[in-house]
Image 1 (cartoon, one colour):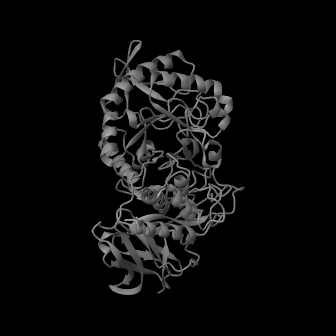
Image 2 (tube, rainbow, N blue to C red):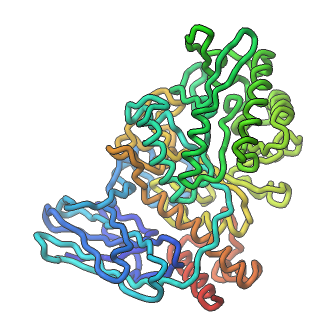
Image 3 (cartoon, rainbow, N blue to C red):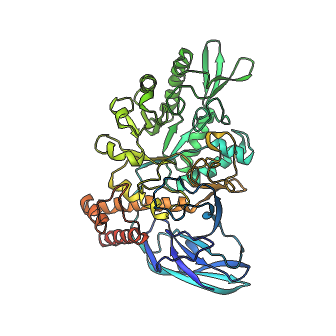
Length: 541
């Protein structure tokens, strides 16, 4: 049986033999993770085992790439930088291999091998992959891997991929703040951190995101509220538990959930409280206009206590606040009033919001905008702290994104661009959004990958739920983190030879200067650039 070694930038479809060029291997720094694939097509139905052999075998993980159904591959007016634009089965889930895998004859499959070297193993070696039936090898192949005696620089870019704790409660049928809630969330947050997510959306109150007007998402509220006459008292015990859990997992920043509703800051988020008799009720929500004096009074009381909590826990420099997501110029009057209030009561704290309208930014209402990547050029050089984001709207002009139907190059190239533009923060909204659009219904992400046809498949989540409460990575998440490792490798080299020489090396073989819309579309280009970076690092150890 033929076994083809491929890079991590290929996607193996069950109905098509891979046509990528021969992939011999790669180099890597000693504290990073790098992957390759082994594609094969059995002639008959079989049960196989997978084995690795070589010096790095003991430090490698094996995954079986499984397909999921794609309903909406892309929007009708998408550009042409897609692998396919039709619905069907697409490779995405990385299932850890433990025992046999069952395969059908006549279909193409892929084994994903992730190398996580011991830092004592330096130099070149071969890693052999073998497929075995009844204990006998029936196909094999190998990749040459060089581990360079240098460490990647630590990631300094802030990366948040909005975390949806309510979706985990829905999928696993657990109650918020139960023991299982904490166990499952710790697993998912650990996986997030492992892949470069160092900032976690923290639901002090139920986040007013992707919610139908007048509808509700499941209550996830870390701060307890009690009503005592006309005053409020606050219980931060669950917030403290969340912060401690995140810090233990390696989280560095906390993104406080939005204090007003999405797209214009017109309403308060859902907030529940208990009265003197211990009865719980909703005290703010869709019926609360942001002009409400009662909500202003609540926010002032809450801010005083939260600021004290933040100071006490030493995380003042690690917190980011939100007002409302993606306001437009028509929302300016309302937004600016809310922004002035938040600036007053959370004095000295950083406030960020997704904002792609440069005219809105010029009003001064948003001090730290997060523009979408297709509008980033308007903000480059004009903001002191440059961020960017992408979501379902970034599918034209070849801008990076990670839809299932896109080539993996379009996913990974983001890292090089973040480095070139010296971006300080990156935001994406869907780490684990397992709902239909506007959260009108929970979904099974193994069956519905496009939020019921609302978003291209792959926009709303990058991890899948396992039966034991752990997150299963998608190949898109692995490739995305490869891009972040590219970014950090560029920074590592910069510290040795200077930024000017790094940029020259990065763009040497590109026809035009790299931008979010202009970059070579061949996987070999990006793989080749990374090899050149690694060799230059090796020269300067």
